[in-house]
Amino acid sequence: MKIKLLTLALLLSFLNCSFADHHQPNFVVIFCDDLGYGDLRAFGNPTIKTPHLDRMAEEGQKWTQFYSADPICTPSRAGLLTGRYPIRSGMTSAARGVLFPDSSGGLPQEEVTIAEVLKQKNYATAAVGKWHLGHLPQHLPMTQGFDSYYGIPYSNDMAKIKGAPNYREGAEDPDYYPDFNDFDVPLMENDKDIEKPADQNTISKRYTERAVKFIEDNKENPFFLYLAHSMPHIPLFASEDFRGNSIRGLFGDVIEEIDWSVGQVLDTLRKLDLDEKTIVLFTSDNGPWLSFKTHGGSAGPLRAGKGTNFEGGQRVPTIFWAPGRFPPGVVDQMGSTIDMLATLASLSGTKAPSDRKMDSYDLSPLLLGTGVSPRQEFFYWNTGQLNGVRSGPWKLHTEQREAVNYSRRIKLEKPELYNLEKDISEAYNVADEHPEIVASLLQMLEKHKEHTADSLPEQLGARIPGFKYQR
Image (cartoon, rainbow, N blue to C red; front, side, top):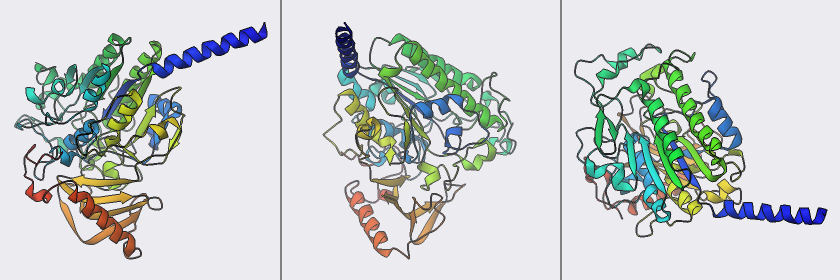
C-alpha cells in the first residue's frame, strides 16, 4: 500500500513539475526613475522603510553589480527594451540627451522590443507608467509590441508652466511639496490624453491599480507587464496615505509608496496562484539626481549619480523574484538591463533578433543556479559618447561628468583606472600602477567603437533620432 501511495505521489509530482516546466512564465518588469543604489533598506538605507522589497530580496535574488544601459532616461529605456546599447538605435543625443515634449522622434520602428519578442508566443503585453521613447502616435508603446498603454509619456517635470515656482529652490526643504498644476504633462490611455495636467499626487497609486487589473485580466494567459514608475524623478508626489510618513521626508514617502506598489503586485500574483509562474524584476533606469539634494536619492557607497558614468550613475539596485524557479541569495556577478531581452527570450522559449548586432546576454543560467554570468564587460556610453569600459574588476574612464551638475564634462589628461572589487567608491586611481591594463582596456574601447558607429559620436548628429541607425 505504501509503495502504491509513494508511486502515486511521485507521479503527481512529475505531472506538477511537467506542467510548471511547460507553462510559459509571466514577466513583470518594475522600472523606477532615478532610484539610487542606496535608497532601499535591502541595499543599506537606514531610514526608508521598504518591507515588501525587503521580503522580495529575501525570497529572490539581490544583484549587487547590475547596470542600467545608460545614466539618463530615454537611452536607458531603449537599452532595456531592445537589448542594445542605445547608440545603436539613435536613442541618445550629443545635445539634449533625452526626448522632450517638442521632440519629433522616438524609438525607430526597425527596433525590436521585449514585447515584440514575446509576441512570438502570444503574450499579452502592457506598458504602464513612463514611456519616454516618443510621445507622438508613431512612437507610442502600441507600435512596439504592447497591447495597451497607460501613463505619462515622458519625464514628469517636463512642460513646466511658465512662471511656476523654481522646484530646485524648493528642494532645499526635504518636506517641500509641489503643485501638480505647475507641470502640464498628460496622462495617456493608449494614444489619447485623458488628463492634463496629470494629477501626480495619485500617479503611483493609479499606475499600481492599472498594473494589478492587467494581471487579473490575464491570469489565464502568459503576460508581460512593463511597469515604469514616474517616481522618484522630480517633482516628487505621494498620495495622502503616504505623505508625511517617512522620517526621510518627501523622498522617503515616495519610495515607501513604491514599496507598497511592489507589495500590491506581488500579493496579486500570490492570490491568483501566479507567483510560481511569474518572474519579476525590480530595478532603476539610472542613479539618483543629486543636484536636487534631499529630493534626490542616494547612491550609497558608490561615487556620484545620475548623468555620470561613475558607478553611482549606472549601478542600480536590482532584485529578481521567481519563487520555485530562481534559488534565493545575493548575486555579485555582472548583469545589465541590456541583458533582459536575451534572458526573457531564453526563459520564454522565444527567439531574440538575429539580423542585427545585439548586446544582450542570456543571464538565465545564473538566475536558475546552473551557471555563471556571461557578462564579463560593460561599456559606458553617455550622450552619444563612449566614456569608459569595465572588464572583470577593472574600470577605465576616458572622460567624466561632474558629480552633481552632470551636464558639465570633465576632460581627463589621461585615463583613470579603478579596481571595483577593492574600491567600490572609485576613490583611488591606479592607472600609473597598471599601464598594461590601461592599454588593454583602451584597445577594448577602440574595438567596441569600431563595431558600433561609422564615425565619432560628435559627427553623428544632435537630435533624436538623428544618428546613423546601426544594424
